[in-house]
Amino acid sequence: MTMPNPKRRGRPRSSSSPQTAAADSAIGRSVYQLASWGYPLRSRGDGAGACEVVALEARRILNRADSDGRALGPDRVEQIFESWFSREQEARREGRQWPLRERWRYTKSSLAERIPDKTLGLEGLAAELLRNDGRWVGRELVMPCGDLELAPKADSIMGQAPKIVGNGVEK
Image (tube, rainbow, N blue to C red; front, side, top):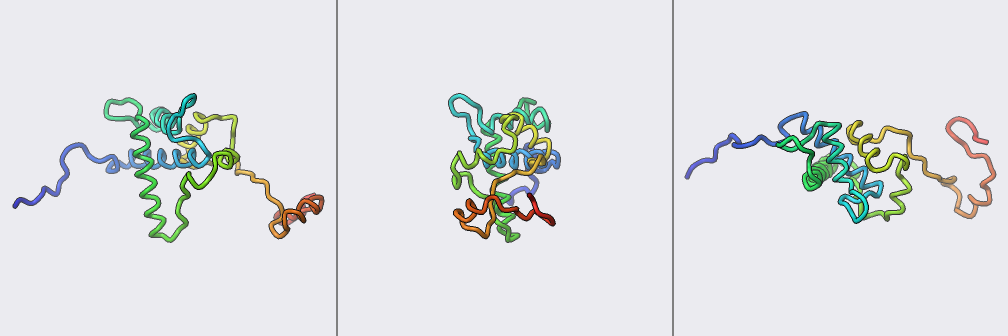
């Protein structure tokens, strides 16, 4: 019985290069953010999906390409995303943090309300996310909310009352 060689043969893993590992992390985080804003992972009929757009933008912004120097394909971007998602969930489980929410838990309309800048489009959002390591650093999302202590009917009746904001009173 022969012992397996402890050295790995063939092409090195992508994760062994810090630059490629960082690019893969940004790709995974960007695809997750786009999916959480309601964009489909794959193209459907008239428009491109998040994986196709992130693949093209990753080639341009992160210089992340396949072995031939071409942009990654949507299949490879989806593999990178699934690998990143499973690693992130495992790390969160060990660190006792809240797990990342899966896309199927939300409706498309509720996700579309959370898109921070609807004028950018899918390509612009993907480019902005990849430039910032997959994190949205633009203006904060503004979600309308009333006074959390009031019931909905009381909130509508007392809507004219001043609301406390930070240290002062908003008029």
